[in-house]
Image (cartoon, rainbow, N blue to C red; front, top):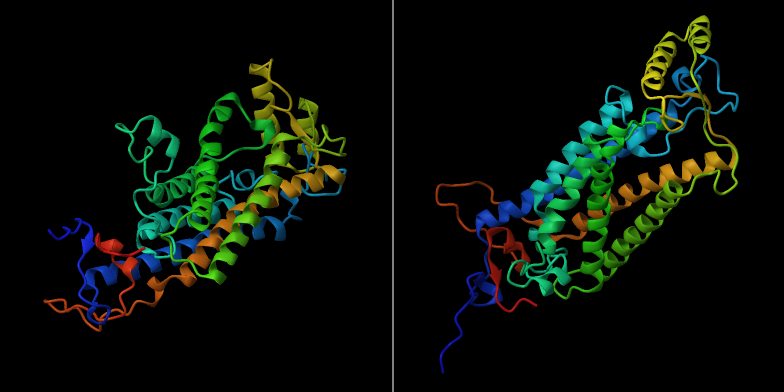
Amino acid sequence: MTSKEPRCNELPMESPQDETADTTSVLLASRSSSYLLIGTLCGIIGGGFSSYITYAYSSEYSRMLNMEGERFPSGNPYWPPSVSNMVNDIESPQGKVWLCFMVTSAFLAMLSQYPFTFPNVYIGNDVPLLPFVARAFPSCFPNGFMSMMSARTYLPQIGMLMVALVRTTPRNVWRPAQNATTVFHTGGAVLWIGVALYTEVYTLAVSKVAAVGKTERRLRWACVVLALISASFYIVSGILSPDALGLCCDVEYRPVTMATVEKARANSAFSIAEQNLILMEGAHFTPNATAPLYMGMYNSASGGALVMIMLGFWGEAGAGAFMLLNLIVIWYFSENRRVQLPDSLTDELEAVPFKAEPLMLFSAGMVPSGVP
């Protein structure tokens, strides 16, 4: 009877007592853990601190003055309806913080390759991202366009970059050209949150390979559920307007005239006067513009409309925050962060003995046979 030939990605092992890990594999596992932690913390700082700046300094005059250079009649500052709207100006304090940390977060998470190196995330490279594509086109897309692990490694991070770099703008300057970029911003959000949720649900609910403990599983499910609830608030607020629900009172826009410009100047609101002139120019050369395009903001939201705007804003922020917290949970319970590195790297790079976690070897392309 012929013996079974080991597959190319299998590492023969004599006994658990004799297991050792290749030094390169150990270094890659440790580096992956560090990249994921630092990248996730950057994402939390970018989203959290930019929101803090927006909230803590909401009483600044620039957010309290309307198109005439006077305080909003509602008495409330202008509150952006989305995180992207909040950071659309990359020269603003919150815009600078957001862009810096979110771009850094995306690249570090991508470099970590954590779906291939973390035992509690690894599900096997034979799981397709889109099973129906694999069934419909088995010869062209045997892995359903791409494997689920590859998708989890790259797509959410690419989506984060798209959201950070392709930003939205306030409604009164939402030009047709700007509207054409919405597909990239929205697509980025789907890649970032949608793909991350989809792959995480599969890992927790379907996969028999991922090594996930009971406590970790509960915490990760909690992050998934809270992210879904948060995202639903944002989606509802984006689809339904306060007026459609009979809520008062939404942001009020009015046409800009030279009288508006002069009144803003008389109130020493010179930057607002300049913005009014730009809006007037756009309205003059685009007579068929749909309101509120090229109109000035006369009053900020209040009452039920403000509550709805705030729910949408914090819903979007919460969806991203809970997915980042999910990565913190994954990192905390992973064996990768406990890997012991060698005291020194000699020319011969001696192997480092430790209790070999089977999935620790994925980063080196080696998978022990018999691993469930």
